[in-house]
Length: 232
Ligand code: HEM
Image 1 (cartoon, rainbow, N blue to C red):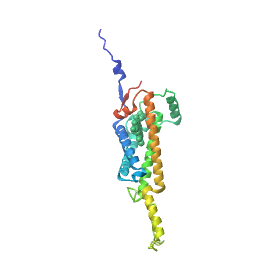
Image 2 (cartoon, rainbow, N blue to C red):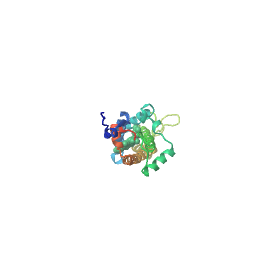
Image 3 (cartoon, rainbow, N blue to C red):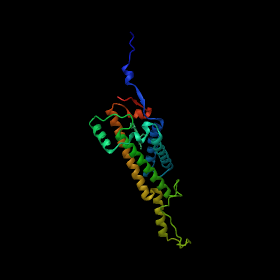
């Protein structure tokens, strides 16, 4: 009687495709674009330069594609696969710190919540950036968003009125320079969103490290190659 040898190693190495190319390439492109936008937006870098603006547009496109993919993409890419209630998220985190967090093939409840938080904050960052840039008279929203400073010296009938005093002119140009640099309140909101996104990204990477350690599998490798060990 012949016994066909079954290799345990082979069985253990069975993998399953989890992350499709849109998710994987989108993720690493997002990491690069966000890093470029964040670093080039630092004040020492002189505000919104071309690198900041273009990497910000790329972040916006990647997030938009990911949101659409969350509705039409394959199983593990869908929002319906990784949106959990608060109780499940808390239970998962509790279990995780006690070393008995369940292993998920797709995003875990906490991972899924982090993905949503990141996508929301990235949308907020890009949205406020576009508005602030528009207020400075630049970008796709320039024609739609009213400029922060519109030094108009026309009277109510729209006829040109008296010339502004030098003091008014100085104040207007200082405010305009400020709006160019910061985009006013919207610009501050933009900075806030960007910093919250960065803080979330740091937490996200720590969470990825912790889950990888707990489940003895590299989630980073899975996000690069798309595969994970088949369900235990
Ligand atoms: C070098 C730093 C980073 C590493 C190593 C990393 C790693 C990962 C890994 C392993 C996953 C899959 C998590 C899981 O298995 O549930 C993931 C998902 C994700 N990460 Fe990161 N990440 C990094 C930085 C970032 C940054 C900076 C952002 C955004 C600002 C980000 C946004 C996301 C998003 C949105 C997902 C969900 C992917 C999807 O379902 O499309 N990541 N990341």
